[in-house]
Image 1 (spheres, rainbow, N blue to C red):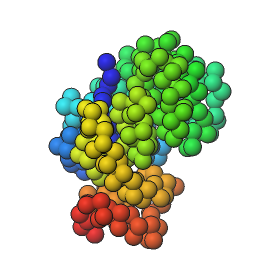
Image 2 (image 1 turned 60 degrees about the vertical axis):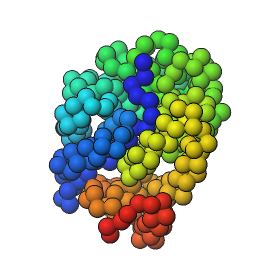
Image 3 (image 1 turned 120 degrees about the vertical axis):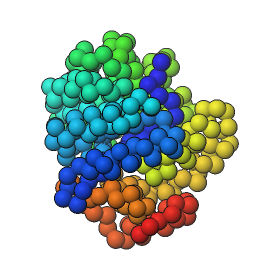
Image 4 (image 1 turned 30 degrees about the vertical axis):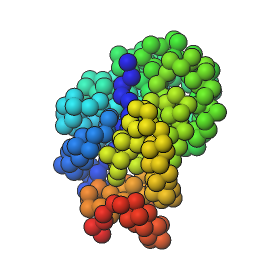
Length: 297
């Protein structure tokens, strides 16, 4: 059984002006996501600035999310690392915190071979009793899980159940589905390609867009899954200009700027991420307003 179907939010980690994690604001964001029918919370991922959180902050954000959500919807924790030992330990600690599943990105920078990837994920899978979604985003990591490797991991570890696919190539998605005989939970990692991805057999999206349009993104995916394909496609096309603006600088710079424009006070970014360029803020503001989002700044 899938951890979730629909639209899961790749949630930002709100910060105070002094760059401490803002746990009070985190609770507000989580409650708003649940109110607006988000299907799952994905915490401490790329959008959540996990790479600049300390280990204790990383785990505390996970603990807080689990406590606040309190089983109303699944909480999936990002626990990947380019160090296998670290990924294993983070995953185990997240299990102790009570998460419902794990999102484990491929090792980055040191770029494992396919054998190295296989061993990496198997070590994580053997340490926990939770469902694992592998995260394949070669544009950021320089490392790609080939379809055959994904299928081998799915066969060898019953708790490796799916993939967040941000490759951006439907032929790759179809190859994974072929190699796994369709018995693999595939989630789009590209907000601009959700509907084509679902047409390839995907069951949802792990979404940046959901931070600022959670109900819309949920409805778009559910429309498709429930057979309203034409309406889902209309929604995807409507979202494209906003999605383009949300990725005109490296994620999560634009989405945090967008949330601040909406009055969420999501706070600043930790270095090396920088504040959004003024001309791009104008582009983002325009796209948000044309989409129908009200701004307070």
